[in-house]
Image 1 (tube, rainbow, N blue to C red):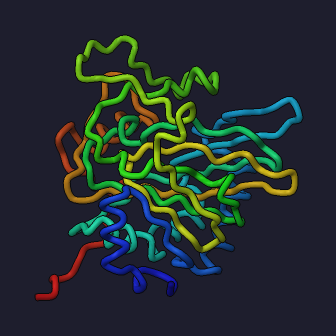
Image 2 (cartoon, helix red, strand yellow; image 1 turned 60 degrees about the vertical axis):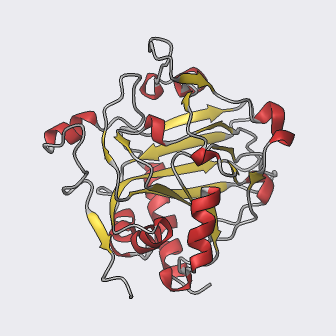
Length: 289
């Protein structure tokens, strides 16, 4: 596929709508990858206040996460505002317009075995809507066994699942999202994907720098990790919001929690996102008749 959105076909759009995820090959050029690697090195050396270690094993191997650093790290901001990713997201979602939501990095030391539990993203977010996507972009080569995994079609199952409380996993109160105190008969237990893998169609791919796995924020996904001793993992992730997405402050908690900054920007539940923290970065031109 050619660099950028030019190679996105109607089939890619249909696959994304049906499966909830599509792997696009070589849509991000090498110069962007090199720039983001430099940005990630800066980010690791000087984490933001949102940075945290998700896991540190007995051998000292670390799984590190940070987010919302795009306005502090020049390489991130350049990518968000000027790379083809906004258009790619808009065309894959078949949206009229796309706003940027936030960035995140995930890094794992060579040989790390830590796997992210299966979950959905949107139930943790400070917005609600179906027209969303995350762009999972490895900055190093990653094997299928170590890549993010997706339960095909699960974005359309229509259930409100009681999500995992990541604070119980990481020991960091900033990850606290608790469904225990929510009295909601509409919640159902989260399916045991890992314990019943044969019951689901689970998608993942060997990926190279320049490839992007774009997925709906309601698809069930997890995994990564299981790295060989000579392999590390660095991923730059961006989140994008489409036409039906509105601000939503969730009583069970949010991670990342945008309540304060959204309120300071004058955004209220039910509003469409916008403003300098959530800029509109792509809008579709007149559709061809």
